[in-house]
Length: 342
Image 1 (cartoon, rainbow, N blue to C red):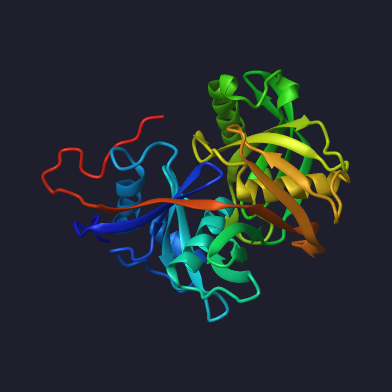
Image 2: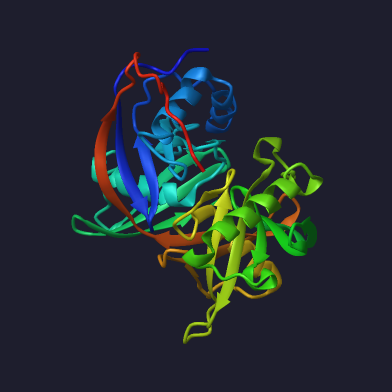
């Protein structure tokens, strides 16, 4: 166990549909483990790795809604890289917006050579499995990235949760992480910035009501258990072609708010809609965020996973570079690794 490194930490920052993603290509601390999933387990209890997360995520270098990832070796030669995703409360099992940003970074940095076809697959090992960032480019310009996720499926339907607003009905689904899904209309809320604080409070409450129940257990891998977040969604008018159009806010970790439509959360949403018969192969879910940004999601394949009817979702978005930084930790700084306010 080591303390956070005093060596400078270099980062490259992106945002995907408004959600930040801070990439640490060369973490200055060792991250133990033989796979990305096991590295996540070890990182939780490693003072050096967790201290580095806090250093980069907490104020004054970050904020309560900061997000990023430490790059690691992949599990084997079948992937280009591995990544440990992190936020203010710990390490995530999945992150679609981060995978999209990593696809852009991998091509822009030269880690993965762009294909002359204009479509370049960047294969990434994440704690929930192996995913792909399919980067679409025209010459030197990247225009979009498809996040192709692990099999996603609904775990439970019409679950009653007793809350401060009374009993509410949610679905629970896996999209690389486990989410509860609540219709905003059922509690008289809209997914708009005006309802921001109420949405946070309700999403947080639902998560913790369910997190220690059997409903939060992953059916095949206990390392993936736990309710990661609550997706509060509302239906919008369907597109001209009849495709579903929704707006959501994902409240994850302990009250953190995704500014994007949430990549793994969108995959979880695709799984629920597929199970309800509301989204079929060939259709597109138009998925908006609380800040008005948008992902498009489709079903690549129907399959079976862990005994559940499942889908392979694809979420299309784009990430943009916002800057580079070199962070330091002054040993005389009384705030040390920082602080966080929610």
